[in-house]
Length: 353
Image 1: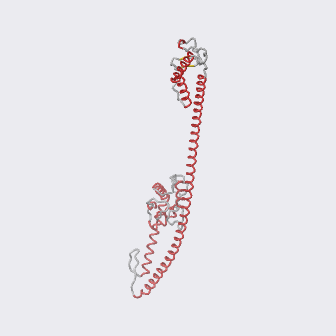
Image 2: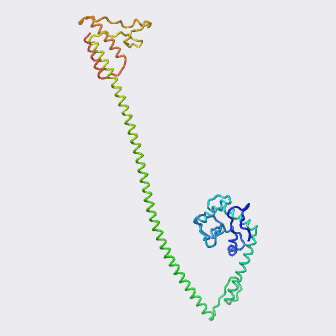
């Protein structure tokens, strides 16, 4: 027999077994190329004579070459593709068909073609001998190859009746076997449907549980994010309240200082020495001697005279009026305490006039 390793090169990897398929191929297709039967692409789940041929070429024996592309066939095809440097997809496509045709051509060059010719002649001779023996048994005179002549003479009637009875028995037995197989298949199908239904229910319950867990997790994340936002908003509001309280305290302190100053003025205390700046604002500090506007500085008031003096009242009224003008120029926010202090100053000025 010719060598089965028909791959170009050193022959590494699994070899296609063309010798195992040679006699079966010669019986039905004579000396034609085997790769000519692989006319389509197939994958897992496909079936046909081409799949059976591919299984035999990949090393599966005749009993296991059932013609259905199962997982074992796919794994064997993937291993063969890896050994040939093809894409290991496990799918028989154009590249795999071309590789098999090339390896068959190499096998024919190594003696596979002569083997197919010899097997084809043997199969033709065997078929011719079988046809002749059949014609001789039937007693016919026809010499047409493959045609069996029958006799309808009364002498052959008992034989025909026996054949008919045998055929009827075979038909009945086949029908009984088919019915039994159908019942078994029906039971198996019912069991398969039950198992599939149970699996579907379990799968649905599992999916529902996963969805519920995901929903709970999403709700927890949203709740945590919401509480974080609330805490941040509360902290911001607390800081705003603290700033507002500090501002209010500062204003109250300023108002208290102003009220204390006004009370000191009402009690007759002299005003501190001060001056007007270039913007017309009053500052309770002496004007430096180097300042060119030293003449604009307000003179230090004289010592207060006994209560009831007209000159002292007029001087104090003038000082309060200037101080009032200074307050008006500062453009500050006036609170309740400050408003009461201003009203007291205004009342004092009106009484003084």
